[in-house]
Length: 579
Image (cartoon, rainbow, N blue to C red; front, side):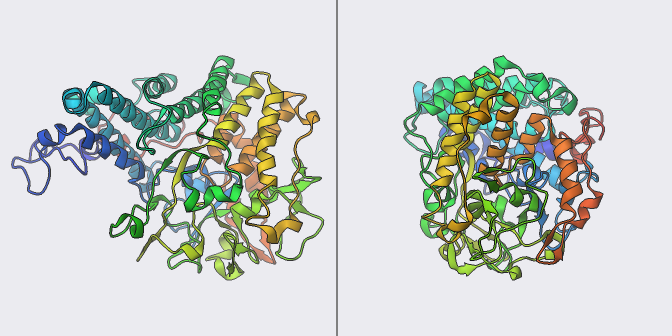
């Protein structure tokens, strides 16, 4: 053996379709593609980079659901108890350390994805023009830079200070000399933005192969980057509304305007349709990780969504592990009075709808598209009505289940063995998310009227999303548009925007990152912990484990650098603050 890199550095050099064996073994193994031969096929190298989008698993989910939902006020972990998987620290924060294997696996696999991108870029640099032609090569480079920035956005969102490994570091084999504090947080974002900007400048709005990265996806990501940076450095003391950068907010307005003006995207007419497999590439979908069913793609297992393999409801599916459980706080947030949110009073009492028993309490219709509840049909199908038996550990995690990431039960399972998975795309950006980013930036740049118009368009779509799928809950729904009086000042407009993002995007893996951006994570989560531990449903108490939960500002904003990575080369990486 010679020059044997370990763990992250090995990951930076490995490929599924093209493995660099000469660096590891004195003798080339059989059954793999020679490195030189692989590099001479630039289009296949690009395909290899794309393949990493969905190369995930429940212990390293690229959609980040344990880190964006479990860690927020929207969601409880679920499963057989608090020790089922290593995700319990993410839902209570107080026991968070750098040692969970889930952190290490996610870091490792995301850097595997970065490696694929870097090696594709090196292949394109060497062979792209001759094999593909100058114009196609230029476009493929832009696509791969989009993909690399996508994976780096996840890394910086999770771990903040990460090593920047690009194609030059890879070519010169400098991985072991690349520190994670070489660049500041903002400088790392500048590099990510530069990759997205190249994609934006080069790529067309519509690709011949529809699911490739395009100009509109790049514009959406640029808006997201600038929106994140506009609030500060990510730590609560120096982040939030007191640190707004209006120039960055104006960038958000500019890039979301490109999305808004594209004729190829828009609001899907019925909210419920957004989360059905047959509509997964509708006009609502700007960029999504693609999945498939083995019956349709003629493979053994299909290209399932392995990030969400734990999230089928107990007793409904063959292997429903009952993770990703909506909180009572989230359910209560859907309460309405005269059709508008109960901003200050929503959580004063524990309430939940019962099918066929409407009362004075009304609800935003999106509740019935988002949260599975006893007595109601599971994903609209009355023959699969949920009961209290569909919860695995009700005394710990209650009776609610998540519905957006699963298909209807009648459609069957993509993969059904010791594990179960579904052919459900993961939205990276859907149109409504981008329009809510636009509304957020408009509020901060003093255009409250247009922000209200966007939010009311979204609420009108929710109002129209009753008859087709949830007619059984019609008498329990009430939603109204915001009057002008709610958008006369920034404080109230912000409250409306924050509420709308929560309800519209509930259980879509991003709530915690919103709270962090707004600088309100510690206040929101510690109040949630105090209240949620008193949960009760039909006499059954649950969530009492939250008595041990606490979020510490100045520490918990970002997740710790994984232990294995931190100590592989002593002194190379620095840990995040206060871990």
